[in-house]
Length: 561
Image 1 (tube, one colour):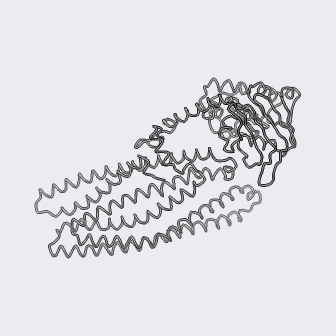
Image 2 (cartoon, one colour; image 1 turned 90 degrees about the horizontal axis):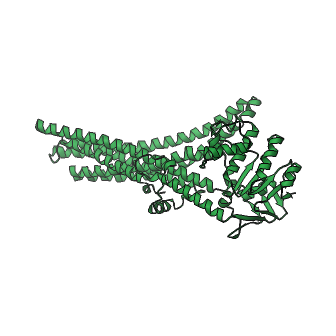
């Protein structure tokens, strides 16, 4: 994870350096306030006002640059999570609850940005201030600079002594937070049981216990941080007093100008604070990097991320998050246009290399609770229509889910014959998922228009959407009709027809219907099944209710179990 790879981060760092230097310059300029005539005083005051104005501009520039860089980091890492989810096996994705996946975006990414980028900005700023302060002290008197360097060294060693313990406490607090979140989630999920049994005392007891453990951990972090801050602050005051004592001696000896007192009074606390924050923030920065790699270890796309980004820029395919200073919408980025073009080229290649047949050897599909054995050899051929039948639990849906990649834990082989040759079905399955449209009995609808729910982000015209809606007998609704709360304002039959419309408009090589017309009335069900069986693509259906008219149109009925 190299933050320096982002131009927006480099600009933020540059702004922080300028702000830090100007801050020390202003503090150092106080030494010139002791003058002998009014004209000199006026010149110094004017210069100081100009410097303060510049400092204000630098502060605005630095804060704006940090905000923009933070925006790009969050958007870029969210995009990487999107890519990881796309490539992640379905079974692995389903091991986590939806709330845990959402937490990646809402909680983890902002926290990582705060612990890495924000802390790196703080470390850089305080380091520059410490160096510039030491230079200023050297210019005032080299003896004070030696005392200051000694103070920095001792405070650094003191902070190192606290570092290991603080890292452990921070890690333990993060674990406690995850435990607390899981305990609260469990209570919320069981709320109906608590309500029906009127056992709110149990609810409050468990909630109080979870809150106690979590809040106790936070208290430990704050307490230790307070002890660490107190010790370092005492050292800061001690060394400030020593330096001021040395300076007072040199003033009395007339070896240092009286005005230097004004500078040192502001420079020494600034040096001490810089060292304290620099060292404590380095601990948080390290914990942020560790948290980053722990959280996203499963997302392999983060490995070598910087190298890929560099290669992209060399090829002119710079990601949208690398523009330096202005906020840029991802939907308008050149990277997305390139991605769309690559997808279009991929579809054209697939059209040239169509699937001719799929041969499935006897399979044993493994679930946690049981294994499902499919003893038959099955062959699906291009353009033909198939019906899978059998008792509940015999493996009909499981068999189809091996084709789309929802199930990858199986023994046996699935061979895909294309024009270019025969190959084993890869369990990554990205290529097969691009060729298959799958419709099951339970579909999810997103908050948005009918158009958005059918197009699913693809570029279709309103006329195309309207035509497919007519095909699936959704004539009573308009493409602009607004769907809310997973289709709460639609009937079960309308929801199923939307799912079918999503599949039909894609015009894939293979169409799989897994009880997808179960919620429709018999007349509409028959009409839609007839429509599907007229398509030129391969069709594989699961249905427990077959009419003679539909059976006549099926090339092969396959019974499992």
